[in-house]
Image (cartoon, rainbow over all chains, first blue to last red):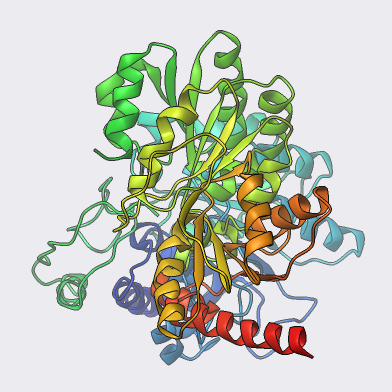
Length: 285
Length: 306
C-alpha cells in the first residue's frame, strides 16, 4: 500500500477513535469492542464498499451489516469522518431526540439494520446475498461479527445454509479481539482452531491482522468470487486498540468515563502519557 | 444481603441447586468461586443453557439460570416452553434488565413482552418484585417451589418496607375509593410517589404491589373493582399481555366490569436513553403518572355524571 494512502487511512482511524472516546462519556459505550474494529470499518467504507453517502438506498450498493452491534460507535465515527452523517450529531448520543445509543438503529443514515441480539445478522445478510444472486446482481454483502458472538448457534446455521446455496457474495468478517464480555473466549468457550471450523463448514477462510490496512486490503482483494464458497476473514484484533491503558483487559468492556478521564484518553490516543482512570472498571450491560 | 449472597447461600445449603448463566455475570460475578463446579457458564448460548438446565432438572437438580431478560425469554423461548414447560421442570429463570431497566440499549434489549409470553406457558409462574428488598423477600419461596418460574429481576434499592411474601398474594399498600394503582416491578416506587401527589390533590388512592403476575391475586383485583372508581394498571411492558390483560381476564372470568386505565407501552418500543430520560420521555415519572391519572379520573367522572 502506498504511504500517502496509508497515512490518510490512519489519520481517519485516529479521528474515529477520538469520536469513540467522546461517546464513552455521559452514559458510556462499549468502547473496547468499538476500538477493535476501527481499521476494518475505515477501510471498508473508505476503500472497498460501493456505497454513496448521497444515494444510500441505491439497489446496486454493497451492504455492510454490524452483527456484533457493540461496535456502533466505531461505525458512527467512521460515517461522520466520511461525511455520511454530520459529526455534530454524535453529541446526541443517548438523547431521546435522536436514535444514537448503545446499539445500531436504522434511523441513522448508513446503518443497514439494527443489531444487539447476537447471532442475527449472518442470517439477515444471507437473505440479502441470496436475493442479490436471484437477481443476478453483484453486490458484496459483508457482515461483521464478534468472536464471542460465535457461541450463538444461529451463526453456524446461517453459515451452513449460505454455503448450501453457494452464497459466495457473502463475506463474514470476525472481529477476533479474543474477548467475550468480561472473559477471554479461550477461557470460557474456546473457539480455536477457528479457521478450521469455518473451513469444515465449507467456507473460504483468510486470517489477517485486523489493524493492518495492507492486510485488510489484500484479504478483500482475495475474496473468491470464482468458487461457490462463503468468504470468511478472521481479523485478529486487540480489544481497546489504541489506548494502552485499556487494551486487552477483561474489565474494560462497557465503560462510562468522566470527561476528565476521556480527556486523558484522548491525550493517550495521540501518543502522550497514559490516562488516569478511576471509574468503576466493570459495568455489565 | 444482596441477590448473589442469597443465591450462594441457597446453593451452598442445598446440593440440588445449580447456577447457570449464558455469559451474563452481572448477578453472579462471585458465584463460581463460592460454589465451584455447580456454577456453569455456557457462553452466549441461551438455547443450549435452557436445554442443559432441563437435562439437569431431569436428574433432580434445580437450575437457577441467568441471562438478559429479552434473550432469556425470547431467544430461548421454544426451549423454555418445550423442554422446561412441557416437562414441568423446576427451572428458575432470572431475567436481568427487564422493562425500562435496559435503558440505553435499544429495542433488541427491551424485554417488554416477557410477562406476556412467560405467563402463556402452562405451569410457568411469573414474579415481578418492586425492589431489592421485595426480590429477596420473594426468592426463597420461588426457588423452593416445584414449579418452573420466571423472575423479572429488579435489584434497585427501594425505601419501602415490604410485608413478607405469600405465594400468589399481592401486597396492599393502601386502599382508596377514587383511584387504585395496580403496579409491579421497578415502577412501584414511582407509583408510590404518584400516589402522594394524587392524595395532595384530594383523591382517595389505593396502591397495590402485584408481585406475582402468575398466579395472580384474583381477590385483590375483584375487591378493587368493587370498591374503587378507577383502576389504573402501571407497567413497563406492552399493553398487550401484561397486567392490563391480566386484570381484564380476571374481571371477565368473574362476570365483572370496571373502569380500567392502562399506563403501558402501547404498540411501541420505548426510546433508548439513560433511565431517568426514558421515564421522562415515556411519561412514567411520578408527576407524569399522577397527571395522566388525574386527567383520566376527571374524564371518568364527567362520563359517570353525564
